[in-house]
Image 1 (cartoon, rainbow, N blue to C red):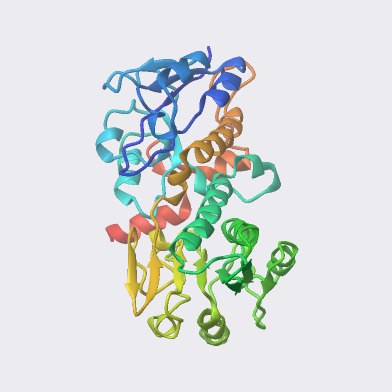
Image 2 (image 1 turned 45 degrees about the vertical axis):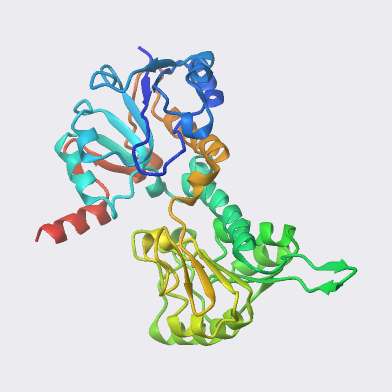
Length: 380
């Protein structure tokens, strides 16, 4: 019996992406998946219901019965607690569930005995690269951050030679050289800016320099397991702050991307540093949703502080909903292929480290250790 997948409509305010796109649905249909899509689910990504039908999907109204017979529900953002109450008990849910931000959702999934997979928990191993949702969406975020910086800055990014004289290029500083940071560097360089970058992982220097940017170095090594950065000690933070203060003071645009999985974003730019920046300077804080890298960032707002513009975008990948949805859908396709048994039916192989590492809740239990510890601690 084929696996029935339901693409739910997104309900988080401002979310325009859709979990599966027609091109991916067409491939999955050929693989034996049975796809149904909630009416108007793709509207935010400029996709009509007829596009999904042409790809082999069935359009279903957004009613309480739309999930009947469903094996897997796919989403971009986490559903609400009320939505979860309408999911069939024991169904599989896949999405960016952000359990540390939505403990009430985790408890609801646990109570409904739903098997949920939170894609940001995907193990950072080579076999999972094609399923890496965080990387695909960070690519969009980094690109967007450079464009936002260019739009908010009162200065040209490239050097211009005009009849009125030569315009010097803007100086852009990127803090954090992960996927988002590297894409921000590449985009700012394409726009003609002089770019410097910093990351606590010394190994990032080669990647930064390969994009034509200058890597700022301090004598700190902060690589952690899984390719992420660890939290710095107090002494290391002081070294970092001294070096960064000088670089930030000279920058026209600062783009920050530093995040630690499951924890608040590290504060890298203090109010004092902002006060020392030049008039007209811009900060684009991609970590706004997890607390911000700048002390003065306000999530979802663009504010002015002493002549410095600070932008804290929310759900930035959704602003490029067409390509963001396309990449996200490809990630989910690869992930769901792991769930298809030899007979074409749904089969969860708990011996597979990708399946086991990405699961959040299953059979009434919270399977992700850090989330379980967080909720048990909150309950205590």
